Length: 280
Image (cartoon, rainbow, N blue to C red; front, side):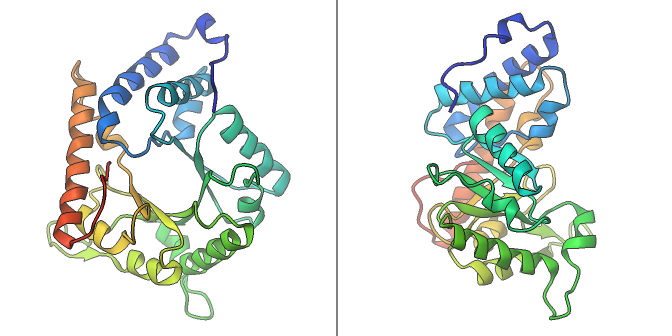
């Protein structure tokens, strides 16, 4: 983790970067009581001047103010071994995060080259079944043996994690249970989570996307994704940080985070699952 921040920051000339960091710091302050993890999206920081430095400043702030809350970087890196090793340095050593996700399309190097044997506590999570509609064009392709491509990738990632000795902290990006059309029908699609648990059991944790602005179903997601303590992290991004565009933005974000935390815990109670405290 970064103990201090780069001295270039006080000389920033781009006010946008400073404003965004300030905006996010206030959100962190008020959402921390309800958060189990923070997940910044790398591209959204890289897309403005000094954004890379701004992200590092935010990570440092979270580490200082909330040292018990891990920071996971949504960056979806996936490349040949020597490039992936550079991503490992960039994300873990320079950005200072505790975990990151990767695209497995270029094979086992995409995972193995992110592993530092002196830091096996880092979370390394592979893309598996995502919530964007166009993902179905690729992830749902049926292979010759009848498996979906995403099922095949699930098995690959589990095998790689086992071989690398990181299965305790490795995971999969999985879409939340979602409603089938027509909207309002009450019919939900949960087979992907059930099937994924059949493949990996309790060995890998799920980073679940699609809750919040993408209208994922919280209770069903908990029902089919939860497999014990630390087995699922339900993420909401835009639905929390963009809860309000007014001066109450941080309070509104905290309110949404608290609501999601409560929804998760209510689902746990209803299903009879035991937990210490689940957060959004």
